Amino acid sequence: MPEIFADLHIHSKYSRATSKQMDVKQLVYYAHLKGLKLLGTGDCTHPTWLRELKQNLHEFNDGIYLVKHSKYEVFFMITGEVCTIHEHGEKVRKVHHVLFLPSLETAEAVNDILGRYADLSADGRPIFNNLSPATLVEILSEVDSRIMIFPAHLWTPWFGALGSKSGFDSVTECYEDKTDRIKAIETGLSSDPPMNWRVSSLDKYTLLSFSDSHSPWPWRLGREATVFKLETLSYKEIVDSISKKDRNRILFTVEVDPRFGKYHWTGCRRCNFSVPPGQYKLYGGRCPNCGRKMTVGVADRVEELADRPENAKPLNAIPYMHLIPLSELLSVYYKKPVHSKLIWQVYVDSVKKVGSEFEILIKAPEEKLLKIFPRPLVKFIIKNRRGELKIKPGYDGIYGELMLEEEFLENGKTSKMQRLDEFFYRSQ
Ligand SMILES: [Zn+2]
Ligand SMILES: [Zn+2]
Image 1 (tube, protein in one colour):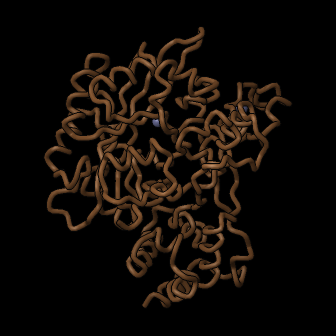
Image 2: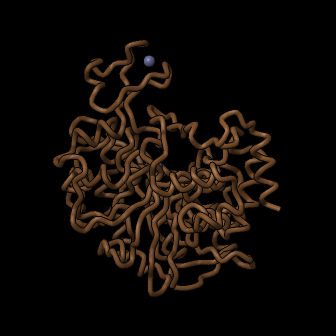
Image 3: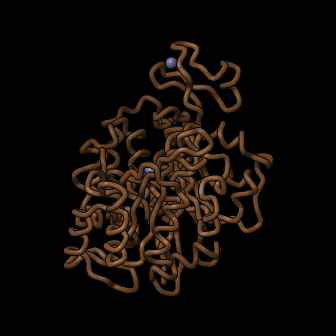
């Protein structure tokens, strides 16, 4: 089988603060543009969403589904995310967990049981109060031993298993006597594999990357992904390759630069104030402007738990690639909002010519790109491919910001309209 770009942590329109467009028909269209071959359904615990999935999907192979009557060959696996809140060591711990389920039938069985602990229809990502992560693992294992569960966005201050606000100091402390059932961790947007490699106790886990997207737009969907190469596309193979941290079957992960994430640095969003790693203690952890406690970012949190120097790399590490979505590059280059009509037009036009966004970002030779894009933009895309873009780090819930260096403009004074004209001229 060819490589499979997979995004297995997303949300449906039934989760809070998600796009109304998050349904399977929209998802396969945007996944197709992006170059994603496999999506998680997200929100498998939500009764209405599960009903929609049963109506719209048919099983293609063991645990792998296709949308009925769709012209796009984009597969689905049954996935979800749940939140546990409980007290441990006199501290309230809030943790998000990703679930992989072997079938829609298992999802029904899971919901029968989990429905006793929370109102599953309240949110696509249900909250279980007074339920420990270990108990959650136990409940799920009893329903079906093939279910996979692992911590979502491991480091985010809120809801990350190792987060600075309500997390733990180790995966073992979080999952207690059920830790041996945990085979993977999701690194989240604000951390990348090299940051995780600094904590030796994480070596045994497979580092996975997914978007956690709340909308189907290609600057969200697949902004992080895991790339598999499998004999056959099946639930069993996916889970087996992850459980064994098999570098032959998991080729690499796609990561945004961690500075692009919303919680990379420590700071205070109210005051637009952030500090580089290692400095927040100089301020007593408080914002010098409003005096509130700053939100400790992922970079500082990793430093606290790290037992290895920077640039350390474990032997069996899975490769990764830093990539910022194409729409973001276009938006910065043409100085138009990422969701504007013009950027969308350029995006769709170029993706249709090359095949997919990942093809443009990762594989298309420079000569091919030059036939479509102006030279400085091609340079920008190549820099992205090498992970060399300039990014202002995100903090306290504010995304990092991609910066355009002057060197990318052949003529610094070229107007954005001239640049767009050039694109459409080349595109004809
Ligand atoms: Zn989450
Ligand atoms: Zn402040």
